[in-house]
Image (cartoon, rainbow, N blue to C red; front, side, top):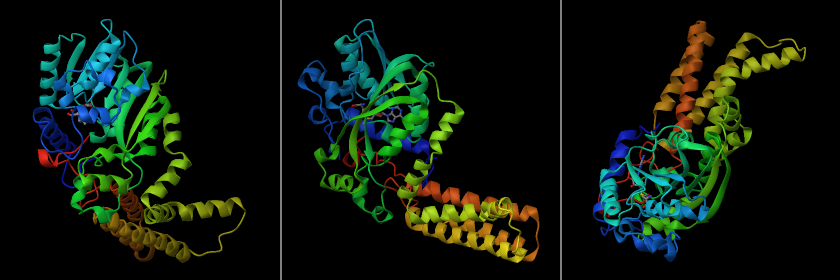
Length: 420
Ligand SMILES: C[S@@+](CC[C@H](N)C(=O)[O-])C[C@H]1O[C@@H](n2cnc3c(N)ncnc32)[C@H](O)[C@@H]1O
């Protein structure tokens, strides 16, 4: 899903760890995004909350909002902080849950975990457990926490659906979730690909806001509520970052939700995901040609069959000869190829077009030279795969992409490091 532009999910995780090692060890390094106590205030924390947070936690704060605005943590709760970093939110949550409660601080980056360990020991905060792990594979049992909190993390996670599924799994039925994160409002165009300003990684990996919220609903969360939308990037020290963020409508979002009593059924899950409004949204996000490619491939594969079915249902006889049907199939397939070809502008990958053309050749061979069902089916299959590849790559190119239209990996050096 994220093995793109030569970067695998593992490489993304590695780059993220290198970057946040810098934030942990050298927070004063020049960064494109706000870090530290001032960043914390800009993110919306009030002084009373920050009063008792150790300075060493605050100096490496890299959150993008104030998830505690959701007000879902209660005394005695077990709280999981996904991507806890140097622990500003961990300390706040530890005080809110009190001695009867517990906070689990999960983070991928060893330097962040070590820093937090030292801070907690120094402050004598005993109700926190530090956990090494990945948001996509949370090392906790099912239904083991009352609240999940996270700040500026999911936009860095390669497979967000999986991470959100994991958050659902570890949260108790009826449990609450509070999140601050970066989302984008509109797809990124390919013209921006080679703009160095796109290294404003705060935008990298972010999801279109509506899709982001739907991922939680699909996983089985209810009452998904946006508490605040705000211009996080207005505070970026980099003019390039501010400009890029503006271009894509990148902004901060604080949300809260409740975990449903049970996981959604397979039917409920897919009826949400396949809802026509989602399809229309994809058309809007992926552009006209992506939709034409999809419709063309669909028509090529099923259009003629559907037409025959409808005509028979209406009692009409087949007046058209086989050559016309064969021509129609090949024309639709050619139309799909043209539309898929336009996808190159978005994702700069030639693979979907080559796959589609191979499908077209097989179909044409089966229709006009020598009919064999296996050849025809192989043609349809290749066309379907090409459409899927094109759609998928267009989707990834809705975030700032590299040459192949996929997410870039944050550059793991201090001067070019990215916000979460
Ligand atoms: C932007 S920082 C935010 C840190 C902290 N929440 C705060 O507000 O200061 C993102 C943190 O998430 C961690 N992280 C990134 N990807 C992760 C993943 N897949 N699983 C767990 N932690 C992750 C990073 O190591 C980093 O500490």
